[in-house]
Length: 348
Ligand SMILES: [Zn+2]
Image (cartoon, rainbow, N blue to C red; front, top):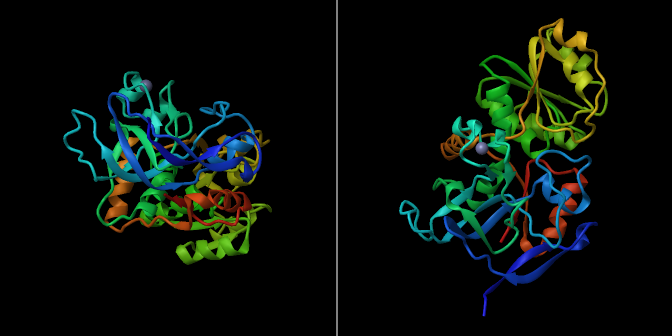
């Protein structure tokens, strides 16, 4: 008789009511996989898209096959460890690096797992973490530093993308001015945290007064609304100069984001949640030496770096709210309300 576990099963397209907590077979780890007892899993936009469909198909999106169990920001304890993984022991606290890649192509060899042509995401294209157990390739496990609890460890999963945006592609330097749009989202809040840590002055745009107030409480110099034109406001804030970096996950905001940049400024793009076909004037881009850079997700080294800085208390992931697994529908409702600030975490 195979053992069973509780899991949040998405039964098809629809609202949060298509998710039910069911008894399902426990995952059977294959060669090289560890069995992880899930303690916390962060909710991601892709978990909502798994039942609603994405606004537009995006790489590496795959049409879901129902029923399915999603959840990519996983933190938990090792239940069983595969042979040859002697440096991990049962009971060790681990967090999952979710990008899966071939390990052999030129990009993987460069350490850029998310550039791999075979790139896909653990917990979206495999059974995910909204369950009591999950079988994870042991190569994708990172130890959770002692000072970090499970909910915070799960919330670190938007930090590698934010690091990619602000540090790797944004090339932030102390004294830079950085504008973060969608400042209440998981990546937005992480980008504010990282930019402040890097010594930048940060401006934030968010859709509600509450989120703007919270961005300022984190240390943003000022905040405004990205649903109205904001380039005039940012030019006023910077004595007409503009900012060095705009972190934009919205897409529809590109014309205003480009106008908000100083000369040689970088528009860093990690999403297109409002529109993927913005219309802008190319001359506003190149004549002022501005550039647009893609930053969809961080690599393994970036993940390690943010974990280290979080363990040292130098970065501080924001957990918006915590729901037990049997209230995962409420977690989805919270995500869709767009009222959240930081990560929504489900504990198991
Ligand atoms: Zn590869």
